Image (cartoon, rainbow, N blue to C red):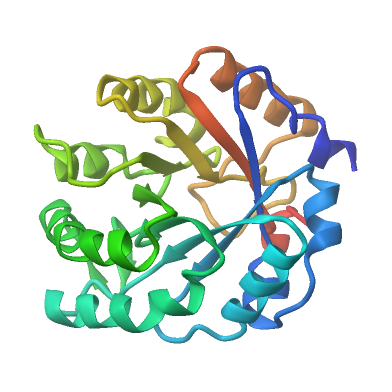
Length: 251
């Protein structure tokens, strides 16, 4: 258990978030024990573009138990913008009563149905942000939600002009061979230059041998050291997280 909790209360981060997709989204189970085990006050829910499964039930139950709910609405990169808009109009109301934060997409820099591009992501943001503002006006609007390799994508999509309504930037902070937690100080500094907080909204150590060659395998001490160093060098990092991923040893 120490592996899970040792890094859970850093000096600068204000928010601890956790995500158990299998129990929450797929099964609609109560995740209160999981949240407490990780000292988390925010439950993140990734809504896949092909089905919501039990995600609305999980969001409702988590909110009733006093947890803040952070919803990441993934979409298919191959969809035309009008279809993405229709998807957000149809899906967001299922979560709006419980949403503390909503991100546009989840790792859209990777292949999600189709290949994403910075320009398309920015176009989607411009089209759906008014829906977020109208349907869930109380929810924080989160930009990016990119993979650990997505910092260049994030920068290019953001451009020189701040996207309307952006209130936070999300980046996935796994220990990877090129990006992830090693570049968090740079990503946080970039976000700060835009007067925005950075959220490490998805991260966990690969404690077991992973089938993914891009993931570094970490001991407890190495992972804790990496997180502590990222925290020390990133005063504008405002969220860390724990993503339950049994395949890599993150239970």
